[in-house]
Image (cartoon, rainbow, N blue to C red; front, side, top):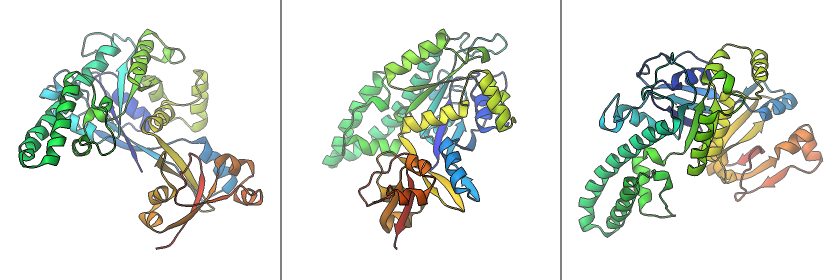
Length: 366
């Protein structure tokens, strides 16, 4: 299961620089002018997980397979993007492909890097992007409302959906994103949300991009972003895209030393990926053997059969039971044999809800 995170923001806030740093690849042009990103750049990035390292030391497998995140670098949006300004709706469509939005906002001053709005104000920048996404959602909803409204004249069930869409349109008109629109199980609006994949229904992480000397402590602009995000119920990650770019090409040891020199324990990639997992309610379970140690991504609250289906649909369809060892027990007892001897390997059935870090072996029959 790949997690797609769309990197958005105004031009010249550091999106492409961050993308290059996150993916450790110089395949997204970074330049000091708007719209230097012409096509959305995509890269699949392995996630660092210290638990995999510990499992690998015990199992000594032939290979290790990490969970991944798909990062999508999308061209800078500007005022009027929903009406075609700048590169317009083409890039709004690219955002629709993402599972979450990482909105990069500039929290550093640099006279050599122009700002499309003329000055540094991250809250203003956030609100510009949010307004454009809301306007784009209103356009999408209006088209569906017009089409379904005509059909609803002879269909009572569709009338309920039309009423729900009208309430959602009012919600958007009040400058509120779709993700804050109340909904319940079997709500008539769910059909609309599934079909339209509205932009402001996606979870948002705010990425405060700071200067190298400001990474160890929050400046005034970062404090403003954190306060704004807290009020909206969103997460924040603080990164220096310039500093991350300087780590491209370093060995793991050099990278660790570089981070330590700034008083940091993890890179921007690690912070962003971890934050994305948290925002989307994702977790990892592990399969461990002599040939392979692998991390598998699942949604918190998924049952054992559903998680088995991440490996292969046959595993879910023919699920019999799962053998489960909690990660801490696996490490403490030095592997599966020790866990079995201590009686901590459990046999779980179809109702078991898989926990983050579980070491699992599925038995199935098809």
